[in-house]
Length: 228
Image 1 (spheres, rainbow, N blue to C red):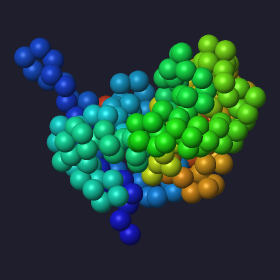
Image 2 (image 1 turned 60 degrees about the vertical axis):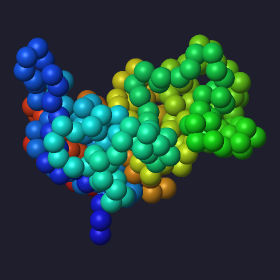
Image 3 (image 1 turned 30 degrees about the horizontal axis):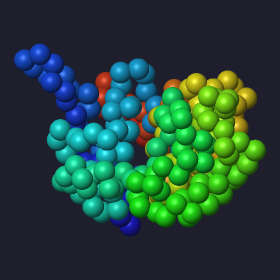
Image 4 (image 1 turned 120 degrees about the vertical axis):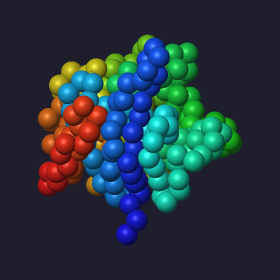
């Protein structure tokens, strides 16, 4: 069976003065459809860079990335933008919501970029916000929401285009313990539904929810273990 995600020999380096610094080294990684994978490692290990490559936000310097068998590393900028908009969902530590937009309009943004009609955008966004427990906050702006509520809006937005994979970077990092646990319960539910989740985290509690933990150190995979 072909993996949903396949990285082969992926390296990433950045220019630094007259030379370069290598962030990732020879990464091989497969993610099957429906897996919940946590990527862990100390600061500077390359976790976020790896997630950016999986999210088509950054190109590998060397190596190949295939999503659903498609060679993502060969796509031009327009095709990468289309892939991000239609096949990937993102949840960030800092939420990345538009401050002047309501929760509904924030959740509907991916549908706007995908050309979905206004009425359908709003209906789908409202349904998703209700699903994550925000039926009483649909028309509130981010400044009127708690951190946990803003992260729920971000999750609804990530689900809007029915993505093939959801990528999250420290999704509970800015939340208190109780609120973080509520967010993790949403991730648990998405996993039970068969969604594919890849989460970068420092948290052992987050990793314990995943079915698999991939560990990075100094830009290399140093561990890959099934949790349960």
